[in-house]
Image 1 (cartoon, rainbow, N blue to C red):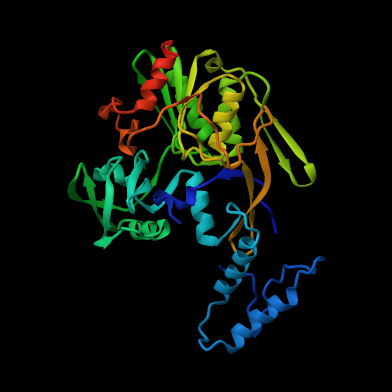
Image 2 (image 1 turned 30 degrees about the horizontal axis):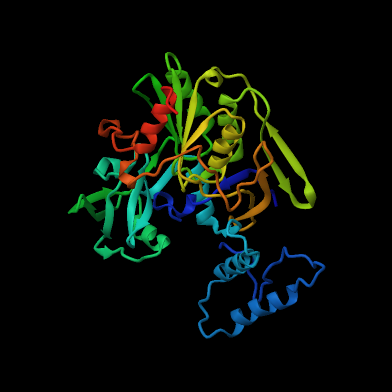
Length: 401
């Protein structure tokens, strides 16, 4: 079995409504073994009892239609759950494909929104560029009351996600509240690609860069935006609000555009193994004033970027305390097409500090009154007069304290 060694740091990618989220390891025989790949391990691993329980269910459970693939997937999931680590998990084949699609910027059967929850209802916190949600007229701050006629109040995030997503080309009617007025919007679920980076030019020749997540194409997209936007720019605002993380390599590439030398971060694994990652390159952006926007949904790989830039005294952070995820996961594809998403290390900032459970404290703490006040680079015509965090960042770049 091949193992994909790709370091991934992320928090809520699969929990987003934008990307809401088995085939068994058994062979076809009368009483197939359960975990045929599970070796006899020291320390009390009881393969015999696991296999016995599996075979008894297959032989004696009153419903003979039980799916052995679900049993095997549930067994793997239970093992991972027993670790007590919120970031280690088993992804069944479908979930694993969705994760891969997400970090490749591919979306199928989705509408392209991320949400927060307020008062028991999902609230649109972000819109993906080029998504069906944008085409249908959804806006940041819309409170989604119903999906297809089902009241969403108090429902779990995965249930909300399941109601909103569906087959490509199908439609879902969303009842939203905007400014206290209810309206119905029909959204056609699509198959689309969305960039992970967007940019625009703000007042005072400030280049604004929004990174939604750190995926396969982030480095290429970020460099393209820099090349197009740097000429004539007097400063840069890097917006990492709502960015739940992604690939370490993409995060280090972004750091390297603004820091000329030194360490980007380090990883400390089991038995004290330490891997240090240096920045690389000498980019023109390294000479420009820089402010980074963060909030409570800035997590993991996004915290590496923000924290490293802060530790290098390269940028000031503006916003609110970040999420606080300091662990590193690797994906290990399994024979059934699923994936073992396993914590393998913790990461540390160049100053040796861990943000696990603590997050990053902004240099300038500025709350945002409501999600809809955040500047939406997908719809720049709405302006940013209500975005107190962005306005404060502009003040700092103009010499404010």
